[in-house]
Image 1: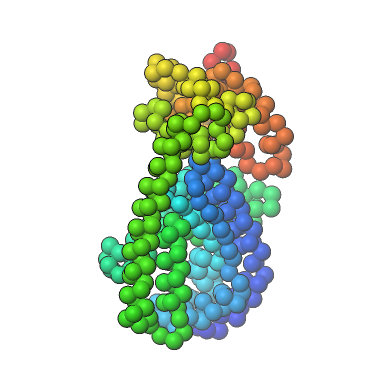
Image 2: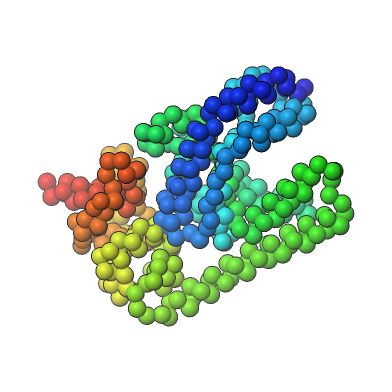
Length: 354
């Protein structure tokens, strides 16, 4: 049985009153996805956000009122059940990065009751060869340490994050618009063209990944300073077996540039020989154990560019912290991951000397 349409008007009035909360949430979630997720690990992607208009919300409710499965008892249930009032999309260049972004989102956000976020990964072609929809959806909430100041009233408001490739986004949007046409189902030729486009999109995903791999191989032969973080990743890739330099690279590259260590030779000196690399991995393990004892939420990862960072902290921790002067502090938002790790590393070393 569909829900009572008398609920639509009060729900829309409430949304008028509260829409600014969703705008504020979407803006902050997009900021975290950009800086703490994509830029921090140098993931090529475009992050966009949107908040439904009151008119769009009303239209959605009127469509829902025609479906027996949408049976809301009151306005509160409507707001609990409609999860896409605030939305963020992360459109990656490469399909491989979708899983990387998902793992980062799991660390950056929480579920409705403060627990883990739950992902809904869709690849509809597995069940329907003509349907090329491919994306990951998650309903994300700001964790407690983010809900301060202007964000303190967002504990009960969720944001839908969608992760897909840019190529997949093209097909997803076109298919969605055609499927929602007011004049009926797509015709046979429209369906044929959608399938043709879907096949080309999948081939496009593969071509983009292959192209970027070739770019990285070309970069490894270049000399001189890194022009940007992508060059840092491309030219250092393969320096240590089993280490993905793209992970946690963004802030590290910024610090290396500030400290005038922005060249392959300088980074190789930090990495050292296999013995020094093995010691770096052990140091990361010891440091993580120290963090775990103190129930800290930050960790280092020996399979990422953190193997460079740990040796940088060993040699120049004070300089690393100094490089953040004026960029962190009261009123400047949540501390950057690298800054937080450097502060804890400094405390760990002081603890060891006590």
